[in-house]
Figure 1: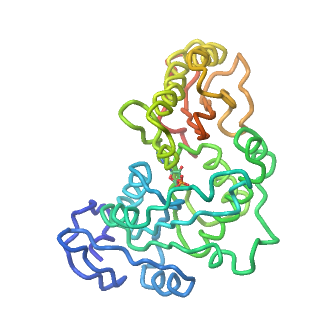
Figure 2: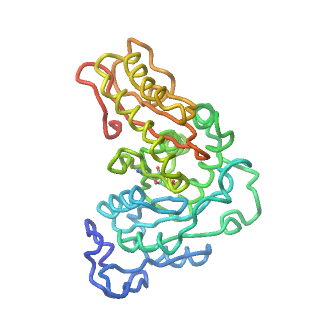
Length: 324
Ligand code: AMP
């Protein structure tokens, strides 16, 4: 498949049927529509047509935006095949969370996947992923899953890791791309792969933002115009904190908090400067990489954002953390 050539650019593929995957070219465009698999059998069949060695997966809950497209493009540039999963995982939503109102935009999602050069989209329903109902055996996130987002959303990370593990097995991927936007999720997935010996390379992609700084998120569609204005204080606080990074941890926290207190309509859940591996608050003497993370409610919507920062001389915002 031309779309599967390493380094192929989105939209640059000739409009020809794909002999490897059976993809058909989208009418009037250069990109081939991905194969869509909804069942395990369809996935197995389509996956068997992809080369075994080099399949990258991008896992999503749908309502795709340019953040997701960036993950897909990075995967596309580095791997022979790209699989996107679109699955709203009930296991990671609490009873009072937004599962039922979460935006569902499959046709638009497929168009983004087509333009970004995806080979295969796996879009199952919960009964396909959990044929026996709720799984009795789950992945445990451990203590790192109980803090920050885990404190606000009990059980969320166990549910998330359980589906990530299943989707890694089902897609038989060799690499998986995740956004820095969900820093705690990314950390826990790295830990799961390392601690449980998953043969998958986890790749982090920096957070993609709107021009005014708001981190892109499927949940931004819930924001009213005035909520959206209010929400800007989250990214502004992170920038202010990062700008003080040379002066040490308390200066970072103080600068970020000063922005948030000016916006009473944002109900801040936490603002922390923590070690990127342990998620523990960094002490005042600490110098090095740290995660500046914020979460809060704006209107009816819970939003999260973060910036990796280098604390100490020459410090400031980082795109991502240096990885082993
Ligand atoms: P979601 O559909 O929200 O579960 O996100 C699917 C993947 O896209 C996750 O790895 C997210 O971290 C990533 N992602 C979501 N928003 C962004 C963003 N603004 N920038 C980079 N990655 C993102």
